[in-house]
Image 1 (cartoon, rainbow, N blue to C red):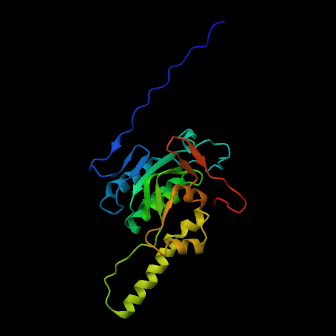
Image 2: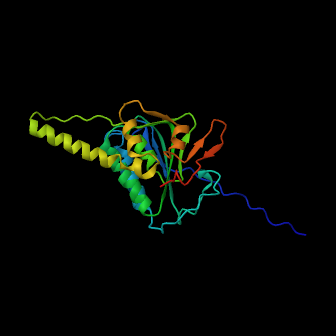
Image 3: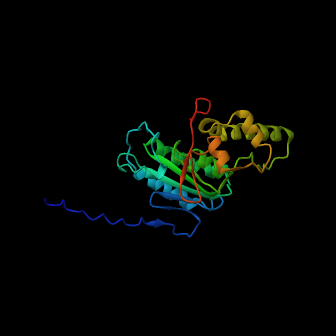
Length: 239
């Protein structure tokens, strides 16, 4: 019997690296690397390139994903024309809320176009970087076993000197941060009381195991290369 013809695998070409300034926060193909402080200087090129990436994406239907039998999030390889994927790799101490909002607005626009935002915390996702990690597509948020997530309230500086302006600044600050921290309650199992407790200190470093338990991530990549999946129960639902 004639054997079927063996097809040689297609050779993959490396994506163009769009990192002309040499910054640690950059895009390579559909992969985003946030490896430094998040601010308007370090993310200027990244935000521009991310905007260009999102603009090139076609609108595709939003699918209901069945992740029950998925052995790990990186074995999910759909046709990019059907379900595009943006990978975000994080090892950052955080930074500016406004710059983080710009990044998240573009990532959420990509999600609205039908894309999956797949996040990986490699070393640390602190402060604003924590928000980016948490807002990855539920079911596709991974932390390396030795990585950490820092949830805190942060600090703010306002150049005001009048009592009435100080009161206005304080009111604005509380409302703005309440909205900014809302994803912790939307995308994790944290309650408002738990979030408040974490934000009482500036050093609420959570291990990957703690994050998996609290729904801050969905997977742990262990030091021997295996994946641990979060168990979902009725009392511990993923959003």
